[in-house]
Image 1 (cartoon, rainbow, N blue to C red):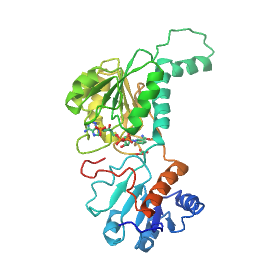
Image 2 (cartoon, rainbow, N blue to C red):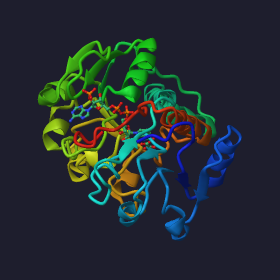
Image 3 (tube, helix red, strand yellow):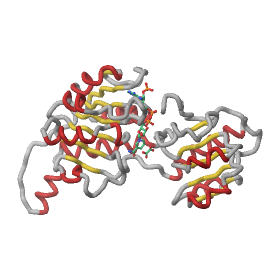
Image 4 (tube, rainbow, N blue to C red):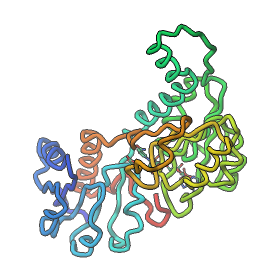
Amino acid sequence: MANSKRFARLVVYHPSSAQAYAQWLLARGVASVVAVDREEDLWPACADAEAVACWDFPPELWPKMPALRWIQVLAAGVDHLVDQSELPAQVQICRAVGPFGEQMSEWALAEMLAQVRGLDRLRRQQSERIWQRFVPATLAGSVLGIAGMGAIGQAVATRARAFGMTVHGLSRGRTDHGADRSFRPEQWIEFAASCDWLLLLLPLTAETKGVVGPAVLAAMRPSAWLMNAGRGKLVDERALLAALDRHQIAGAILDVFGEEPLAPSNPLWTYPNVVVTPHLAAVSRVEDMADILYQNLCRDRDGLSLMHVVDRGRGY
Ligand code: NDP
Ligand code: OXD
């Protein structure tokens, strides 16, 4: 139950920015914050917390926090928390929504434009002082398939359309997300076959784990690129390596991986048609996350329902 007219007792747990969050909140009158940047300092600091803001958190502490009512995850994805059995069912998990769409769009468009405009080739030519003209391709007229037409997918769709792309969207149930053509999970094969670029912006859930496997990869056009900025485990990595070896797809642009950081021995580093970016497509900036956290603190103080509450049963 919310506490009328006082802010919840909050623990902000973050390895590098806990103090920055606390200062940001303090400047707005939230004094009930304890900032913790090391796991070993969490207990007993969190013992009477009513709210926690964090990325991850040691699950064994949840049952020892009887006053805990809600968690503000300082990120969009919550796959690391939703199914923790230690977390009591009545504790609400809120995620971050809003600031990621722009960043993700720029990541996706930058990477697609780099391919069609031949940026690597041009930089190489310049370094060798070679004047060699060629006809770059365009994004205009191509189909971007977005698996996961949520907050981020919709933002990418809007910006891709400004480049003349047609957007095909796949979602779980909703079809009102503004794609030019909408697909449901049972239409994965048809969806994959319809795209020039297949961008994964799905949450990782029991349903989406390994969803891009041999069948989806085989359905993709040999000229198509797979892009993953959702979660690494959406893709069956062995199947992807096999598809790359067989030239079943043109290449892959990957921001997320089954294991992060990507091990130096992972073969994905070595493919000329694989682009690896280190999970930075859309980062959590302190000012953005603190603002979302503050809005929820105010709503909680005022007895209003929290924003962006995750459906723990659904997994996102
Ligand atoms: P949302 O919850 O807003 O959107 C999720 C979308 O996925 C919805 O359209 C939903 O369908 C769809 N979906 C869920 N399950 C399925 C399924 N089984 N089959 C088909 N579609 C499904 O999430 P966001 O857009 O905010 O974020 C998406 C993900 O992006 C995050 O969970 C995170 O993993 C990742 N991310 C990565 C970042 C990075 O830097 N690489 C940064 C930020 C986020 P419906 O609309 O019907 O509910
Ligand atoms: C997120 C992420 O989920 O950065 O916000 O991956």
